[in-house]
Image 1: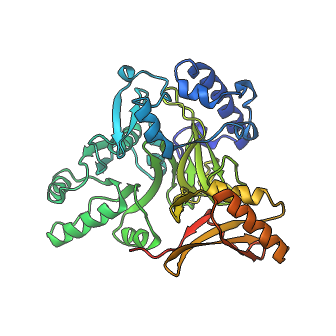
Image 2 (image 1 turned 90 degrees about the horizontal axis):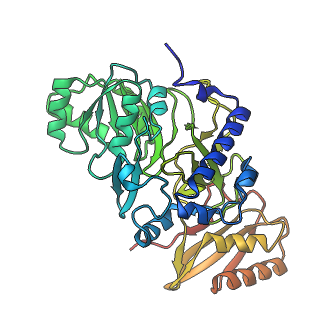
Image 3 (image 1 turned 180 degrees about the vertical axis):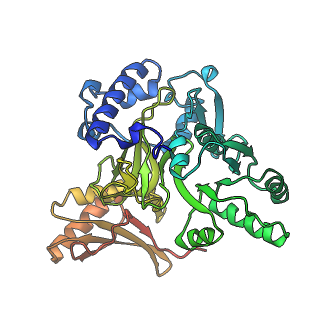
Length: 411
């Protein structure tokens, strides 16, 4: 039996990088006349020069947080799709609403590798509890199960009693859905005297899968792997059975950038996940997901050679309103760049005397009143708001990607 989905998973990193950027240049040349928004994003960029990540970093990041307004202005896909709606397989809708295309290519969402790495194989029967109503989730997971030769029960979410009936009759040996709903099904099955014993493996996504829940699922005799996916990109990264980290999917170039900026971060630093998708129907270029993660050093012991994400580590969009005015991470980054020698910065927003208050914590080897005053002036110039400055030792602020920490009480 093969141990990998295909040869692409075990390429040397150098070969993958060269082939991916060659494919990117060809894709962009073919897509420019079909996707006007992509052409606008590439204004002033020489496509022939996009041969590595350093060159790619010159392209501005296009963020998911902007997609809703852009699609309203130019429906349905804001000019980013290279295939006309009538030539697509499905026209889907996520909450917002944000509209998502699906093309006709096999395993269009790239889910097959995730299912294979999780131990799904030909002949399995998968209970798919992701929604098939408007949203892509059900179709993403179904395509992955089909890519490995498995049959699918298109159950969708909810309707626990019907789910238990289907499980009893059809005896699925595998599950796809959120980890929370898997727990609900197992508990409801036990309560009803219909324990779920047929399911032995699971692909979970769409919700947190903390160690406590991982341990509980394992105690039920189920080997579960998680994947990180979005409606725009399909499967971005996935776990390999029993191995740490989420392996980045093939056909994607993933960067970690400083929140609120276009600036790539080095390995190990937490920042926003930015993805370039090599897809002829929907060629997204430097697409900012708004999710935080970091690259884990080294390769997976399973033999797959692509980089690994640490998993979902929160949201990158930390824009917040202070005294009626929005403060953005990009403004705090501008303060840092104006004062060479600083490390990480964190703007802490609190309430003092029933008013919003800001304190800028800045890593610096120099701890003088003069530097603190200069930073306070820069902060006010950038945000139009006054704030205190606290200079802290280099390396003392946490590496969690957080630039603005809103610590005001809720309610």
